[in-house]
Image (spheres, rainbow, N blue to C red):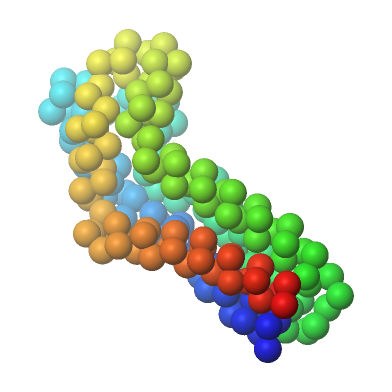
Length: 172
């Protein structure tokens, strides 16, 4: 019973993480277009995004990182359902990493303006230094449907709460 609860939580967490690249794949191009339009409005060449490898889509780590977490969570769920001797220890290790990783995601979301501003400064590109970062990010964010913000909050609740429940379940 406890292993089944842990496995169920791990499957929910896997789905939560896989939702990230799905949403970014579907709406990222719209966000990129909106960000380029905002740069044009600010008098900045939109090509500066590509020149500095700035993206809003599901390429690179925006896909492989959450999909990797999803695969690990499915594997842990399988170990828990199978009653593997490794399940408890691996659940403790990986759930702790998932909690920490999701904490970093949440932190990066909350500090996006200052992080992007600092990244633009580090690039040393005079055009990037002139970007009104809050307006730029707001334009990209507004290209995503309103439900995405709700989905993000639900995802964080599932990841944090589900990880806690999985840890309790394998400890009983």
